[in-house]
Structures are given as C-alpha cells and as structure tokens.
Image (tube, rainbow, N blue to C red):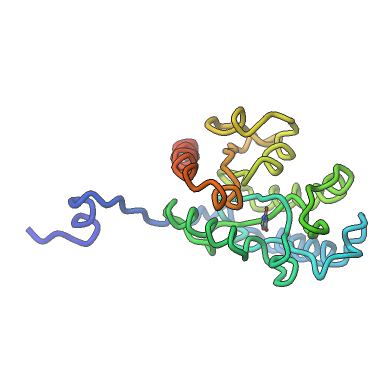
Length: 215
Ligand code: URA
C-alpha cells in the first residue's frame, strides 16, 4: 500500500498539522476592512499620551486580520520602534519559533501589543498609557474576532484580564476575554524565556491547552 507524506510522518511519530480552511464568515467584509484601515491611520497619528513624543513610529500589529490566533504582547521595544512591527528582535525570533512549533506561521496569526508605542528605555507601561491605547486593541480584537487570544507575558495578561495576579496564578488555565468570552491563555514572555530557558517546556503545555480550548 502506498503511504502519503502525512501517513508516513505520523507512522514515525511526527505530529502533522495542517492549516484549517478559513471560516468564510470570519473574513473582514469591506466595511470592516475600511474600519480597520481608518483605525490604522488613527493609530499612526495618535497623540493621546506622551509616548508619541519619544516614538520613532507606532506599531499597529502584523499578520492575518482573519486569524484564529491572536498573540498580544506588552509594548514595542527598540527594534520594533525602528521597524514598525511587533516582536522583531531576539524575543520576536523566539516567539516565531513558538508560533511555528504550534503548527502555525507568523503570517497566519495576528500579533499585536497592549501599547502601540515604545515606552522609553522599555520601562513598564503606565496605567494612563494603557487606558489611552486599549481602545485601539479592543477594536482590533473585535474585528479579528479570534478563536483564541494568547497573552504573551505578565503585563499583557494582567491588562487583558484586569488583574494583578502573578504568572504562577495566571498560566496553566483557560481564561476568557470580553463580552464574547474569547478563550485566553497566558504564556511566558519570550524575553523571560531567553533568560530562563528551562521554562520553555511550560510554554508548550500552555499551547497544548490553547489548542484544546479551540478544538
Ligand atoms: N516585547 C513585546 O512585548 N512586544 C514586542 O513587540 C516586542 C517585545
């Protein structure tokens, strides 16, 4: 009997993932696409908080606006501020690996941050900055309508879930976001994993949890 590639890989114990067909109903309609464009334009000229004074440019987000998976980090760092794209530095490369190991690609998910501008010297976001900026992210979440949100790191998780719980409390369970109760799973920030590589296996169990929550 002739085995195809998928059968062969499975026989030797390699998990095979395939990208599911897009849910047609999830695609942004032309009106939503216009709203998305207007939002991006508003963000690029935003002066709602003082971070606009020190930024090189805003970092709106990257990926598929119809994605099932939405990854949300804390704020742009130096590399992201220069490039105008989230997670492009060392931590970004590790996030790409996490996404790839999940059977996904950077292009098939959407990646955004709580803040669209870099805080000086990568300090933690101030509450008034988060409050000014959150409206943009909320609109992005509404339009993308993801099947799962992955909160990348403590700050993103605490802001999205409006809590001051620790990572130890937050990771390892399925939370929910907003009125639509979108499942939300918290993973360690890749910058932390670069400092503490022994924690990487925990991210894998959190990704498995996320997969379970949408299957
Ligand atoms: N860390 C984040 O939280 N977001 C980025 O975009 C880059 C690093």
